[in-house]
Image (cartoon, rainbow, N blue to C red; front, side):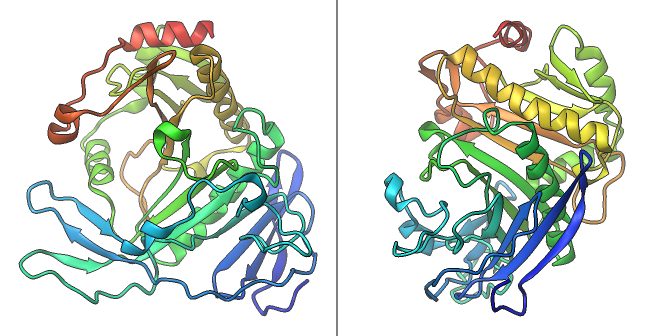
Length: 363
């Protein structure tokens, strides 16, 4: 079982009739590693370094936009597009340089990001005069979907997607318990999005402050916005698929060409409230939307995907979603966020959502 006092392997929950286990392991540098799987993980760790880890950055508030942004100079030196033999997300192997995961195998892994912009022990060491600043408290975690260096949310298969959902739910609970006010699992996919590691993985940010976009969503739902009614109006013209009480659709107000949302048909605050059927439907649609994008654009599609759930403590009438923003506007044509969109926040969408839905349904 290893030699750490934090090294525990416990039955987490049942998912699709199968037990799921989680092992929490303290790495030599103090960062935590959580191993999720359908079988208990009990292997001994391989030797690992105890490198110094930066304790986050700082937040500065933009006085005109009202946004709190992260400043983390240490991230400039993070790992950049290593070769397959230097993959830091692969299992470690005896006699080889250690990776982030000091075991010869695993099913799914979550660990504290070595280059985190948010850190629970962040302190404000260089406050800029005349602007609002704060320590960049929170958590940044990396989610490694599988030991193999190739794959995506479709090719990984339903069982692995169900395992990922179980891990997300567990990390929501853990990060809320640590005081994070907002938790966002997300995935960057493809060079056009800026991916620096091609091993299938995502990330989780646990924010010490609720970001402005999410504050606005909380206010909209509390003010009476009804996403369930919007989904009902959108189906079937803008719908792509339904599964297990979940719907995938192109929102009528999409900002990206071929933008897709997945949401439960019933109003619930977060993924943690999903029942067995909804978790299965969500897992299926995560793979199905990835497959449809790749079929339509005829390449592995660069996308930005994130879960939008309620903040810690809940929010009135909140209706959670998973949102996909593709960085292509047609096969072979990148969707660039140019001057007007970056400076004004007003997007120009080149494809009508109705046409996007029809095209993705045919993919």
